[in-house]
Image (cartoon, rainbow, N blue to C red; front, top):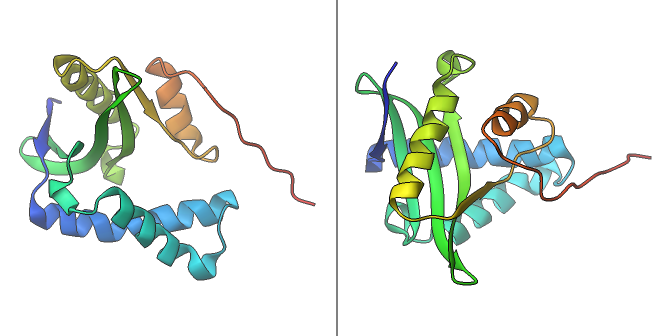
Amino acid sequence: MELQLRPMTNDIFAKYINKSIKKYANEHVKAGNWIKEDSLERAEKEFKKLLPEGLKTKKHYLFSVTHEKNNIGVLWVNIYINNNIKQAFIYDIELEEEYQGKGYSKQTMNLLDKHLKENDVDSVQLHVFAHNERAVSLYKKMGYKFTDFMMIKYL
């Protein structure tokens, strides 16, 4: 079950970005943050802002997660300096459905930790939608701590 993180190719990036924009828009609708009618446009704007140069955007690292040379998922992380501290932010981690719930996500996170330590990163953050209970559970197991809570009450 050995995984590797490999730099994402242009072909995989093109497929990833289209799928991810749609998923991101849907997640915001599901969370109650955006309305469906303009969610896709908002997601596209956010992605263009974050990745203005696509794969070549400085300080953003897009990886293919591979298992036995097969692409089984993606990982997108930004490494930056904040208050003279080298930090990282995970924008996305997603494995193909048939690889979920089998320990591959944990192994991917461990590979990322190794990569970040090798690059002298002091901390790593991420955002997770509250309705994604599987991801919340994984991140807690991996040692992530909550730093903020947003709550909503529908009337």
